[in-house]
Image (cartoon, rainbow over all chains, first blue to last red):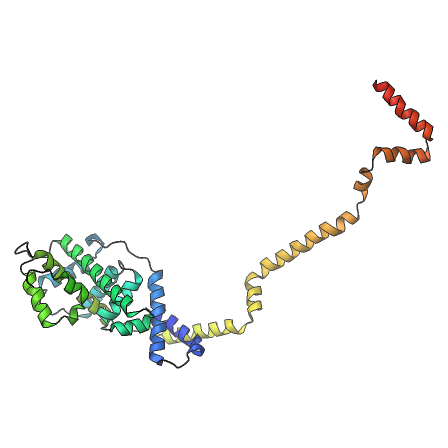
Length: 160
Length: 155
């Protein structure tokens, strides 16, 4: 992450001459940061799939704790947050880089579709499609993980 | 609505942005549908891990600023050198070896043939040799008799 931050500072400094002052400085910087992060995610190896056997003991325990008390508020100890963040990275690595970016910005950071479109240079419809696809894929991946653990879905009736 | 699966609602909307009505519909349907219950739990957990992911605050290491400034200075020093000099530094050895090879080939092509006219002499015809010799040693009749003598022997 620090590597990405350094890259953003360097790019911002070297490209400062190209900033024409038409948009806000914050928007210009956000765009540089977004593109830099996207390139770094692209260069990282994408996982084809995540299975229960790929999870660490801590991640397994974290999932068990969450499922045993799914209605309650999540715990926010630093350790628990780090475990969840690591798990998020591993699950997100299944998605294409652009989908990861859209999902993290919209579902994680509560950015609007318009804000993501401005930061990435994509159209709003493209952002929506990417977010929808990423959300669905993430849910399916989590569902598969949880079903392998045998701790999901308490059927009352099979008809919906 | 109870009879309709709620998976589309989960995929369409940010989980934390679901309205109370939507949540009521999802919960009441999920109680009777195991597939949608699984989807609901997975969507909720996905939302939790994403929220935890963005909450993670990464503090820069102690010398982060120094490293960034050093990288900037390095980049500036590289940019201040003219492009041709940078190219020369990176590919100087290759370019100079190519230049040496070109000069050597030029020397071999133009200088060496000028010093060795012998091949021209070897290309001379047999007739010219005979006539040259004739100028020095043989008369025309002697040459004719030599040629016809050879033909007679051949027959």
